[in-house]
Image (cartoon, rainbow over all chains, first blue to last red; front, side, top):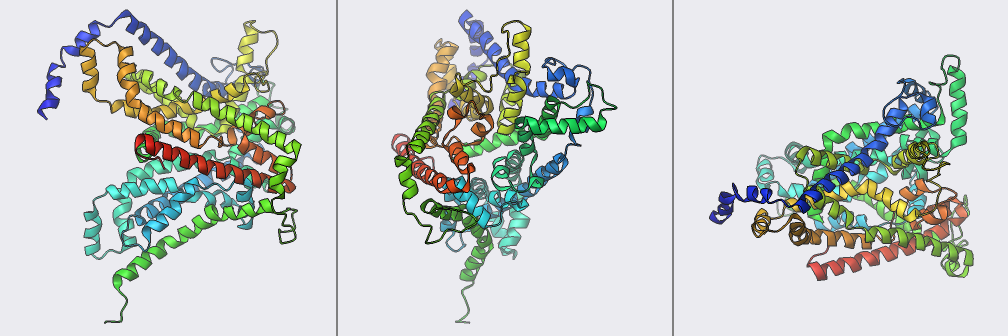
Length: 318
Length: 307
């Protein structure tokens, strides 16, 4: 302990000394670093900013790529008109539902299994733990997966968004590791008081492992919200089960379909709307993009610490 | 009393019963799809189920080598896969360098801001990445508007359908999405470096570059090694989403990686399901072998595996 204190006593003058001696080479590096990272930040922020300012600008100008730095002739007509697009509200509802239901179930199951796999008393505990975690490395391929999901009735069925995703071995590993760090005495005490396995989970462990559950919840929610492939593979026969992500993809790719939509929506509102407010293919794309990215952007700043924590726990495990 | 069941045994079974429903879900959704591999050995003509009559043995496996069109397709797709993964591997040091120099920034709020905004793209889906890519790089997007506006080019360039440097462009999108996130791990490793070592180097007159080169980078190499091993283990698995959203009639030949190829051939009709399954089986087998090889390599070099 004494040893670690000695260098700190020197601290007052050594860093100062070295700062004075900062060479011109170091200064140049400093300046370049700031410029490069400012550029990185710009490249990451601007695309989102561009889409947002275009979604609230004069549609005729945005269609021709004229809105670059700040919104021009601000109006919010686009947000009114995209929600009249056929299917978009349903898609929003499906996206929200799958995110909420999927996240709650994923987190609860990860917590419960993570806890159960720490119970030394369980019959063949280690075997079952392996049975679950090995699936991280098993990948049958999308067609065998699709065909078996069809057999299980998961195609064109809302639960196809939920069941294949609710058991995430990685989250279970995280929960198990966290449960193991909780003092065993806590469980022992509850057991002496007569609490059973399930009771201990709900009254003792669940409140204690909340921090890790928050991290997992954030990850699971983002996964559910962003999921696209399962709609593509499983829900092809039921457009009313499309998610927002899938709708957005369609809006970008199927220009002809979009045009039909545009003329429809302009017909109904054409009398009132000027050229500046009438929906265009570009305005619909931009506005739907903002609608889809908005929840992530809202949630992200508040949960950033959980994201960071998530990768750290993962790294320690790996 | 003597015949009653041992309460500890009873409890051990009871606890197993609590997890049993979840084990069944795992079996159904993670193990049962492996049963789908039998489709590779059949002629599949829906709505007729597969049966003994449709069994064709290794026919679909042999078409892989015997049918020149398919062989060519697979070779093309493997080329794309190897190039995409190869470029990623060749530039896998990028997040590390990103983290090292980000750490050199003394202005705390600026550092935090950069870290926050560069991590954000990791949390949006590939569909959204494509949506912003389309907004910026389509013929009437921002980039073309600026370039034609300033007179740098006469006619808009359609960046998204051009195949020049397509592999590198795909890598750029991947990096745009992931680099900030991948850097977090290195930033944490940097914060774990012993301050005394750096102070001592300063006393000895080391410049910042010397400290980075002789202290920071060497302390990050173990983390970097694991990342390289994981990259190698996933060499064949680029995932299909990125390439699916970015593919179009012009770029398809170049961006079609193995995972996307499987989807695309299956999408051409249920008659191709068996062939798609064949590719998936071969890919899974190679991937498992790669995983074990890299894990063993890691054990030999580093003393511990990453599985």
